[in-house]
Image: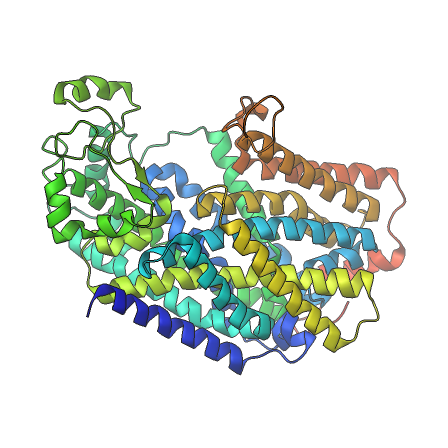
Length: 595
């Protein structure tokens, strides 16, 4: 059986499973559409949260970023897992006790202001739309390779599948679909990692293999990897090469952005009791850890295999020849990925070989000149393909490649569905029902939620066709926006009685606008009069802080603005202060109240 047929069987079977579950768990009320009827077991909710969380960025892109940068990109691991600790300790149980359906609804009631609710809707939509772009990018990458279609066609197919199970199932359908998607994605991520760890180090557990010995050389794997990449002019894999300020701020942005993402918080509205919300967060950490503890090994071993393929006799030997690439089955992965446009190479010096090295490193100039090299000939290697291509690079069995195809799509689709549900809930429940047509019937609200979901899918698909970066990079910007706008409002809403409606609104707007403007300036997305197009970069930044790390500064400004404005205006009414008190100090672990 050829590889395309195997891929089609795995992907088709997984899609049939998801759509079947959605039909079985079809939402019949707004309670089921928004919160799955508040009847999800905490273990299942933890598993669904893991799938909701482990997006295309985690499954497809994160290991690629780690592979080509090394230690410095461990910020993704630290920030994303640390955020769940914050979520479990500081937000989940209190928001569940409040008993509402959406994050904007909590903010609107806590700050006794329709304006605050609308600002929260704005923040939610901006952060979620930015996030969903990364998921749709991942869908296009996975479909493009494994179904041998263009990225655009793959993205459109993925949008249709999400539509099929998310629009009708709502939170109830999405929850049980995500349980199945978690099982698919975790098997798809860990099984290839086990195979590759056994190949390179003889160890079954990839995390142990990372610190094991490379069987071909007898040297520690990481030490050998450091030697290989530095010989080619790249920075050492295990060294710290970026500035510590950005590393700390980026990690913090990811942490508080995680705790402020509405589609993740919504998951904790689906459990029966306050205690179950905390247990759900704990189980989610367990399920997430299975992938996140494996990701560093996947990144390092993939970098090791790729470099060895381009320099099969070591970095002092000969580079791989075009003849070998064309005729050796071990290199067939290059031809298949070249068709997607995400992998390219060019024999610039017409020597029949492909030299892969860092031609930006001045220390390599003498060696390049002596050997007749005229530049790095691996002209494109998109980070987003690494995990998906990993089994092919390592020559694993065809069924493993098919499983990875299904896993990558499960990761992207599960998070996309959660984000789209958060967007549609904000539009139908907070904007339509809460503001524009408060007398809307339940059936009308349910229909408006489904229409909003369909429109959100269409918009996300359009934006996914022209993403502003790799999946994980795009997602990182969404975290910065959530960190600067939503997280501070939730924290102040729960833990202080002094913040009033004016302070909350000003704080959210200050955090959101500062962060958005900084990102747009830093990324060069503002049009500058007199230029022919958007510039690639804009010189100058605040203390050298990168756009992906600015969310932590935006959050600080949010807190400061809210406290300053609240101190200058009237304190919240007594009933609101009593409400904060009742939410902050849960009385027992029984059924959650509506207060």
